[in-house]
Length: 186
Image 1 (spheres, rainbow, N blue to C red):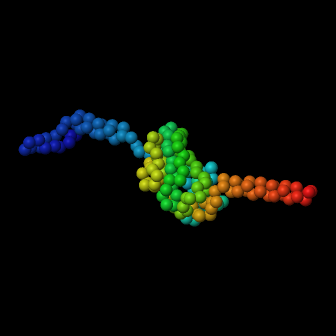
Image 2: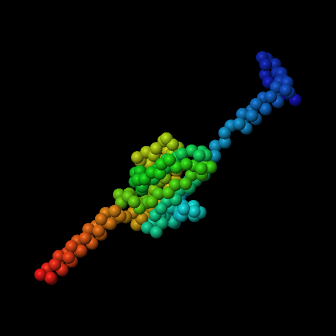
């Protein structure tokens, strides 16, 4: 059986062997074409990455303030740089050089370390190394996820400054008590 084709004024038929070869060539091209994997990238409640989190119904809060990101379909054993963007779209954290072992990528970000970060819809974007996350969110990563963060998860006063203030207060009380005891003996 052949394929009918037009040659000049009349119609002719391609020999069956040519038809078979053409079909085989097309089949080989289609078969050898790389299949693009669907990349999954999601935020989770805990390190086990079993419960999707950061939705409007289940936002990150003071109780759950670490975004555990997880995904599949990445290039096996490639390194990725992950950017975390606050509610204003500003880059607030990065996780660089994360290896996608077996095509699976995991990252985490403590969401309560930057007191200047804005609550609202946060974004996480993965970029294949050597690309780096831009300063503002533009959705150009190979994988992107949005998640919700309540204002209560962001500290009003940075932890390190709080610790310094407590130490200074304790030292002040100690020296005041010591001075008071010295005057009582005199």
